[in-house]
Amino acid sequence: MNTMWHIHRWSEAIDIAPNGDVVGSVTIHASVEAEALHFLRVCMGPKWAQPERMRRKVRVSMAALEVMGTRSTRWSETSRWQPDGRLELLAHCISTPPGPGDQIRVHLEYVWPGKCVPLMRQDRADDFVCLFSRDLDELNYRITLPAGTRTKYDVIGLARDDDSFDLSLYTAKHKRPVIELIARDIDADRCVGLRLDLK
Image (cartoon, rainbow, N blue to C red):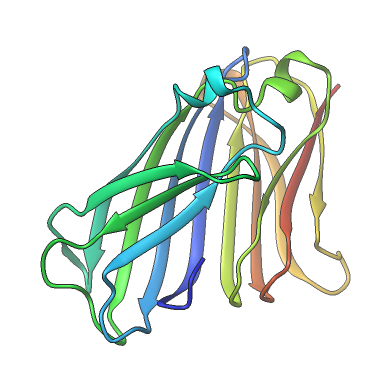
């Protein structure tokens, strides 16, 4: 992330298919710190070296952007793969950019074929983590698994005695298990999230 904006809350929901394909969304609540926010930058990716043929099928887009509670006009989007295997999404403002103190809400949606292949098809544990360069008020990570899946799970980067977080497992419609992590007051440059392993 960059210092032009300060992300306060990150909410991510992912839906995993039996073959490891993922459909997900991210909602970001942030405040602008630059004189003018001309672009947004977000990076995301799997925790394994995904083949190029799978990368070509990945689609990430900004579904909505609100500035001070008002829906903004569409921003121009570009994306590129980073050397570490993450996809970088850049959204460029093509109208009047938000200014200092403006509160923004960004909603991203993605379709990521094969993102969870190691977990679903290779009998390997998988990590679902976030890392921010600034303090984060709240992280909400919700993972929905296929019906009938039995899973083991734990937190990454959080201490039960020192950190404020809730970790739960419940059943959604169609008997699909959902693991949800809500963590609060996360320090900058701290990798936090979930590790899942199928039973």
